[in-house]
Amino acid sequence: MRPGTLIGQSLRDPAGVSRWLIGLGFSRGTLYSMVALVTVLSVLLLELGLYLSPAQTEMLRASPFTLCIILGLSLLMLVFALQLTGRMLGGRGRFGAALLLVVWWQAMALVIQVVQTVAMLILPPVAGLITLAGLVWLVFALLHLVNVLHGFDSLPKALATVAIGIVGISFGLALLLGLIGVTLQGGTL
Image (cartoon, rainbow, N blue to C red; front, top):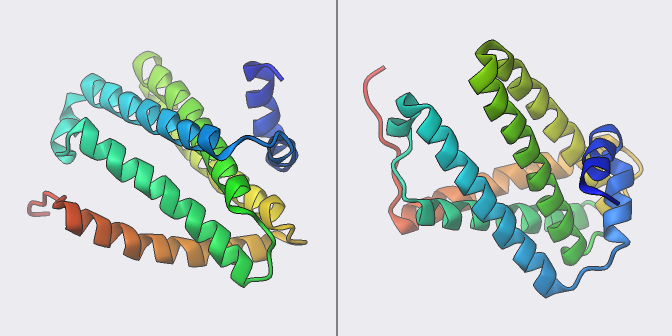
C-alpha cells in the first residue's frame, strides 16, 4: 500500500488498517527500529515547531536528546499499558502487535502535526481547528486499535483499557521524569 493511500485509509478506517498492519508480521527488531524512527521524527518536528514559534520555546526546557528519551519511553510505556491492561480485561493482544499499532498511531499523529504546522504558517486560525480535529481523530483511532489489538467486541471495553492504561502511564512518566531530573518550569499565574 502506498503511503498516501495508507494515510487516507487510516483516517477513514483505523480498525481496518490495524488489522492489515498486524497481518504484516514485522520482526521485533524492525518494530524497535520503527519506534526509534517515529521518536526522532516527532522530536525533530517538535523542534521545528518551537523554532517557528519562539514564544513557546520557554515552555520547554529539555534537550532534543532528553526529549527523545522521554518520548521513546512514553511510547513503550503506552505499549505495555495497553497490552497488559487489555489482557487484564480479557483481551488477547500480543506485545509485538501493540508495539506496531502504537508506532502507526504515533506516525499518524506526526502527519497531523505536519498539516497543523503548515496551516500555522499559511492560515494560523485554521491550525487550531486542525489541532482539535486531530486530537479527536487520535482518540477515535486509539480506541479502534485497542479494540482490534485485543479482539474486544465493543469500544467501551477499549475505552476502559485506555483509561486504566493512561492512569498507569501518568504515574510511570512522573517517576521517569523525576529520575532523569526533568522538572516543570513554572511561574505565577
